Image (tube, rainbow, N blue to C red; front, side):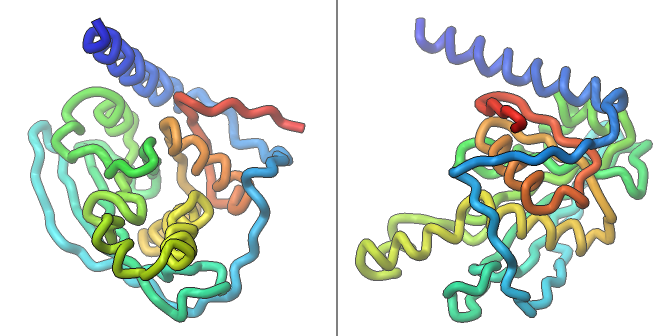
Length: 232
């Protein structure tokens, strides 16, 4: 049945994530390559001066010695200074620590979708998150802007923007390039020089955008599901 097929695909996807993480320690240092894509144009930051300071929201102890700390950070709606009139959005993220997590070894998970929030913290007791924690990583689960506990996008919020052109103008600030800049604000707030990413499906496209715009911030990039890249 279609339900069994869906369950099998979810299981296969989870196994693939675990395999990617389990092989992470054997990955070669990231080699920067030039990638060309008409879907991912290079964009320069306008020198946005808004300071982004993370606020600690909650601490949660999970079984097995795993802890979850949730933070919120205010970031510009428009990182590129084209419009937005200085508006800001909130981005929520969690940092998961295991018993042996290193202080400077981070793995950022970029969720698929688009439109889905990050995994719930209680999932850290098994699967790929547990595999990453066992390899001494701190795992960062970010609710991409517009999803989860971050500033949401809903029918009601879009209606408040006005007519269709105004809604489109607002939605363009929720694409992969803006998500990458949100991640950079989070990385800086954590005091991390560079980190690794795991991009699942749409999160893989965000990872590719990351490679294009801020390769110096990345130690390693893992992609799973829905992304085919050809270096040229």
